[in-house]
Length: 61
Image (cartoon, rainbow, N blue to C red):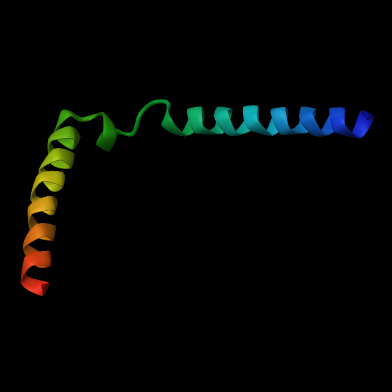
């Protein structure tokens, strides 16, 4: 019973460590992700990437 309790405690401790590490990596947010141009670039890639994929599918089929 003590082993089950310590296992849950170590699992919780690891979860907190992972969350803390992720927060340290993203705080402050990297400049590439924080810039407004990054959002525009993302949607442009999605828009044209979808059209390119559709065109490739049509040409291949």
